[in-house]
Amino acid sequence: MALRTKGSAPLRSVHKRLTQSVSRFKQRIMELNLPIFTQLAPCQNVLIAGMGGGFDTFCGLPLYFELQRRGQKAHLANFSFSDIVSCTHGTRLTDTLVGVTADYNGLVLYFPELYLAQWFEEKRREAITVWCFQKTGARPLLENYRVLLNHLSIDGILLIDGGVDSLIQGDEAGTGTLIEDATSLFVVNELKHLPVRIVACIGFGAEQDLAYAHVLENIAVLTQDGGFLGACALTPHMEAYQAYEEAVLYVQGKDWQDASVINSSIISAVQGHYGDYHLTKKTRGSRLWISPLMSIYWFFDAPILAQRNLYLSQLRETETFMDALQKYMSYAGYIPRRPHARIPLP
Image 1 (spheres, one colour):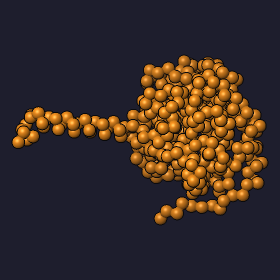
Image 2 (cartoon, one colour):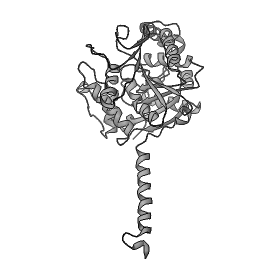
Image 3 (cartoon, rainbow, N blue to C red):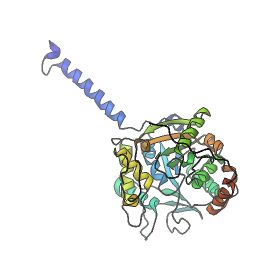
């Protein structure tokens, strides 16, 4: 009878325990369930680096916020499409490596890393540096990585691929735009002293000219090799996702900034859109296939992934991006291609 008495101590106790359980559940579903946290936990300074240029570093922002929430120090970097050599502000470590901060007021035509730093300052009151690698060949990029790792005392790297063309090994029916990703992968594979080197992909299905059946086949082979480290998905109620979405939309709303198709597709997928949905004007007139697959992070051991890539050995002596592109073009014709395949779903 005491349990049924309005306002009784036993009833209040049950209600309190139930409220606490609901609160803990809500807290858990607002967290990004990182399958790689065990590998990252010992790291004191993690570098989250966009490997394919453009807005790739933005694809790592949910991971950045989640690591911060867990008390770890993370830094942001990008294989940049911006004009890093001519950049006149920030912390310059080499001719082709600069740390960009929010305090630049000059006119820039395309500089998502700068506007990301400004978003952190304006919206979160945080003064951060976004490290930018000039788009070069493998030799200068490797030297720049070594300089930055020493400068920041980095002991773990998360390479971020907006899309999945970093999983292309080179014999697929469609290989997309793999040169930037392959160059970054080559460089990180050379940093053999680092105990933690992981590749994270997000945006499955957002890229054109990829053989996605072959990508899934590659993931299966990587799983056999021990290189697949797990997956997790972004959802709308995650604080890490909400901050990421705000940052992307803030930067894409700036003058002269070309919107990111991949990040826009990821946001569309997390918001629950499907099919031919267009978040930005940039893609209108084309046909998109937004799907829940785009909201999933796939994690891979970088050295094992590098072993599967047929082009990496060709990049070692490249100085410029054009060197790397020419090496790819001259070598590609010698690699037999797998027959075109479709994902056999009804």
